[in-house]
Image 1 (spheres, helix red, strand yellow):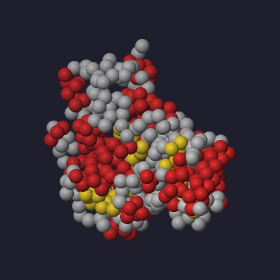
Image 2: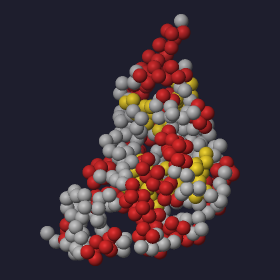
Image 3: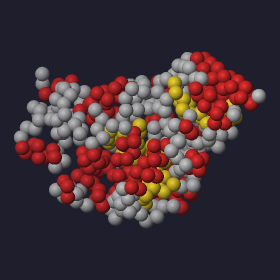
Length: 432
């Protein structure tokens, strides 16, 4: 077999190579060098290639290129989970004594990372009062190194005005990092509206089947690190750990991902396995079709819930009277995402009873699965947050978050109907 054929056979979409050991066709922890000089060149980042699977491997490289292409970025780094991706993106721009400014509507574990873990490493995270660009800009200062938002808040369902927030970040000389997990690049590509870095939990819509953890950091290649070298010297000055390499000089537009891989992943090791990358690649093959069905089903579910007597309210951006509907029209083509929340009439206890009586819909904290999934945030994903922070994040005691799957819509609606009826009966009986 020719070496260039071996490269394709391995699933490594690179330029054909005639190097005898460039691409193995088996899963392995490490890769053989042609010589001492070849090994040195790889470790010095002077030549592309593989040396150790903690840094990169051919199967993950394919996934990285496809995720980057879907988001319209120049490069991507795929890691063990979405939280690892977010952590790496934050650490790649900010250090001790510096800060990141964030919207308050966040996924629960993201809030924990920002409120407790990063501050323990000397990085402050400042939470704006709301997701408005004005509130975000108000708390940016000379030590701010990035602005962060979720394109669609999980579970708040707010839609961030990415274009306006990006303008604020750029005016203050810092990049905008956007978690695009809920929208997925099928509904929204934040880089088209000014986002500089996009992160994903690939576990969700991209993988789509709830089987495999994974995360991604994607670089637009558009943030001018050189123009802000005083704020980001790690990209623009020699790195002593790589014999004086300057990332913007050596990697150009892909400097952010190159440093994220060489410094964050290489040294802390949140590695995505080749098998996980393979499974995520299988999911990506159907993501466009699945998201179309997710959105269609969610629209029907939202209408059903809004008309139900045992539902207090429904937060769905696809409704014309939703406060985020104008942004849904701008960024999502007028549709709501398939992640929506609703308030069960009767508050916390009613919501728990409803949740416990679901049958088809799974009680899971995951989302973006082909199966419909439900979560009671107040008792699970956000229970560690103080009540006042839960309110800022859009969490209420009776809220149910549902990630609408691709099952037959009559089955989804039927399960919701019977669970709401059961919860209402229990609450009514208890009140007698």
